[in-house]
Amino acid sequence: MKFFLDTANIEEIKKADDWGLLDGVTTNPTLIAKTGKPFLQVAKEIIEVLGDRPVSLEVVATDYEGMVKQAREIAKLGPNVAVKIPMTADGIKAVKTLSEEGIKTNVTLVFSPMQALLAAKAGATYVSPFVGRLDDISMEGIKLIEEIVAIYNNYGFETEIIVASVRHPEHVRMAALLGADIATIPFAVMEKLFKHPLTDIGLERFLKDWNALPEDFKPDFLK
Ligand code: G3P
Image 1 (cartoon, rainbow, N blue to C red):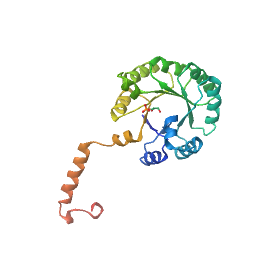
Image 2 (cartoon, rainbow, N blue to C red):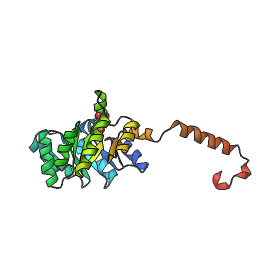
Image 3 (cartoon, rainbow, N blue to C red):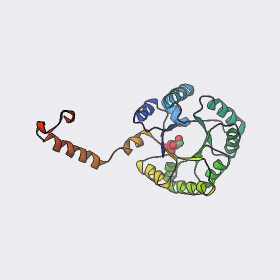
Image 4 (spheres, helix red, strand yellow):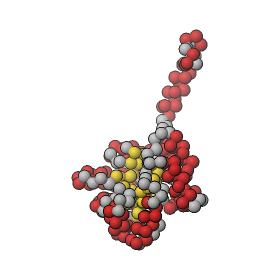
């Protein structure tokens, strides 16, 4: 399972990269706006840190021609760039054109299994179903992932499923159990994945017991 970071914040990206667990980054216009920096500056900084790992950057046009034009420019930023295209009829048409040109795409704002099926049929590289936003309106976000995984497996689609709009570690656990290819995770949630209170209590006790030993029981390299 791949872990992407869902952020445009370069400091967060560098920290997550330092853990050695970062497989990619996804952004959206809201996340770019939050940085308070120009789009190209943010995009280039992220691409530089990620090297050959995938980075998703989103178009803001909503018509077919506009999306294709913007996507071609965004794709020029690097071979690892996937262009996020919104899940609309024009968007799917754009994905079809772009995939035929060899441009990687990530169909975003997906809230139903049928939308995910259309994205795969159009040749999308990635599909991004939003689990948290479905939970927000009292629908079961994770159920959507289960159905997309089943549908894609039925037909052998190669489109990778990015579980997006992740709000807590439970979303990541369920995504992993269901066999989703990727979870794109906010930094604060990624930090939480490391933590368990019993780990902290256990470590404290191990060290307390060790420290109570006479000094000459401990080899130099364990002092
Ligand atoms: O980038 C797509 C998605 O992960 C957004 O998440 O928390 O704004 O619903 P959120």
